[in-house]
Amino acid sequence: MKISEISMVIIFSVGMGLGQLLLKFSAQNQVIYKNNSWVFRLTSLFSDWYFLLGVLVYGLLLVYWVWLLTFIPLSKAYPFTLLSIVIAALGGVVFFNESLSTTFLIGLSIIGLGLVILGRG
Image 1 (tube, rainbow, N blue to C red):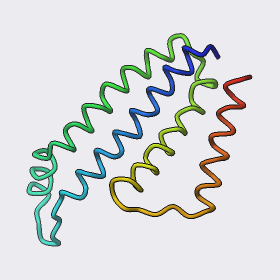
Image 2 (tube, rainbow, N blue to C red; image 1 turned 90 degrees about the vertical axis):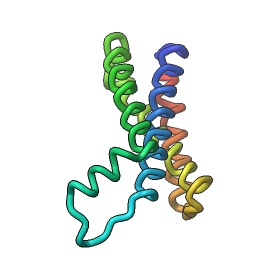
Image 3 (cartoon, rainbow, N blue to C red; image 1 turned 30 degrees about the vertical axis):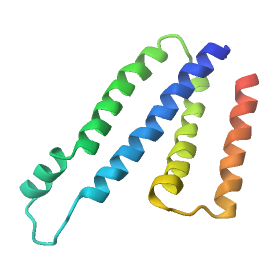
Image 4 (cartoon, helix red, strand yellow; image 1 turned 135 degrees about the vertical axis):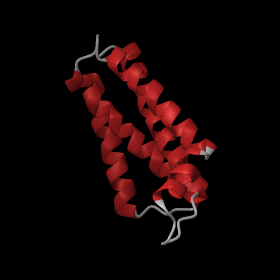
């Protein structure tokens, strides 16, 4: 893959990770009680700006992804979407005070090494 193609797929992956963070912010805003109706839950969800922005980001990224696939083979582009896991995990630590185990960090490192190898091949 060319550096420009790798860069474009990385932009997609970072966007996906950021979209996940937006949806997590939305999830934290939701107040779910056992006896709330589904109408109340949907109204609450669709009135949340984090949710709406997350859906917008995903919608735009879907169009961007299809465009990328017009000139980048799926088999080459798709592994780079794993970068979104790294972005979401690190965002969980920064924004939601989540912790990452040593084995998880090792796994993220392996993903990074694999992407470097795939990018060179």
